[in-house]
Length: 552
Image 1: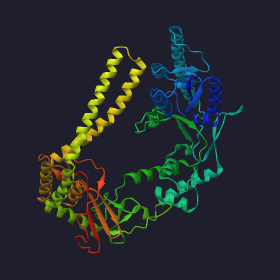
Image 2: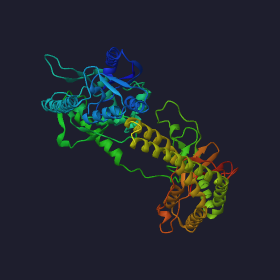
Image 3: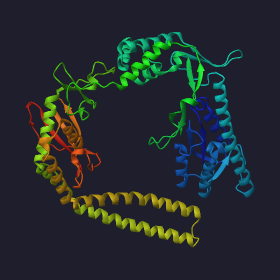
Image 4: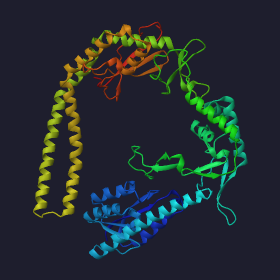
């Protein structure tokens, strides 16, 4: 009796709901009754064309650790529908001494079975691509004949499946039709997408998804959809891959891009909106995108000031002749469930407070240098400890390398099997990698301590350059300076916190034009350089200055 595991996969959620996974597992349990099943690996809703699947990765990792001796799979295509991927996984498992057993195929590890297996895999992959191509061409031909291809009907229509007497079609949904007409009429009245969302929310009308609020993107899609004037288009987009940073993706091609208009295939449907009204809406949408609203007031902290309560942006507001900043979640136009109650702040007061504080810093770089030295002195106390850590890791790494040499020597003298050799080296590599990474981090810390004089000179150079021009700056140049040195300005009731970073100056570039070397803005650490009441015309407010851990 062997320690064995089961692997099952279905490619769609629908198959999962219909119990396909359970039927696979049931058959596999019967086939594996002679062995002891210790785990079941299941990938639900994952395509067989991708190799990066959570359960499959777990199975491969556990195989490397020697947790089981055999794996039961229904068919090779459950393991992978890509022949190259299939060969990679099978070769990997065989190398580790894992016995692969297919329920629907008697596979033996001999040259004849390998040849047949490879030929069948290549043919299966070819057939799959052939079916996909036939399906694609079939859909194009169907669309060219004027028939509906997509089963997902736009808002305002119901999808009617093909019957003996009729082809697939979109049928007008009377209730949704009224709502589509209402959205178009509302937009022509209020002349903004947000205004339409607000009106719909006020009327208690919810979108098809059932959510409480209408997304602006949903309303925009409805207003731009030519289906409502009687023409739906097929073949508008093509699928492509996107790098979204996720390790596992059930669908590889998750992004869509627009094809050339010549490739679009028009399909006639029943119209809902009059063409003249549709064209009016398109002109208004275009106008809203291109019109430039002249700024009545100047806001120095635009894009920098944030709400300390909910984390949203603070935006400039005319405030009936008294310009101020207020939280976007406090606006009455915003259709959100809960409004932010953080106070607004006078724009002139906030601008003056922040600017005067930064000017004070540029005129007195010793303030920043002293603060930097404070952090540096804390690092110096750990200098010996850091060096001790590096020495200790060097000692451990040396031992690991000696262990690697012993494993290689044992393998070359045929004292251990190839599978044991590979697993031992991989296990050793897993232990070495984190040690090397930690050593590099400690070495960087040590290097940062040694560069203290250079960093202090950078601070002085930067501040002196800005201070020499501070009295001749335009409003826009002041904004550029703040964006150069400020991470954000956080507003709490009766206090402002400036999160700032001082760029390095290489002596050859113009800092006022934004040409500087910013440090990565990560890991904020609070430093109260101005406790208590701050400068400026608003003595009842505090101003605090925050620096990054390593800003120079």
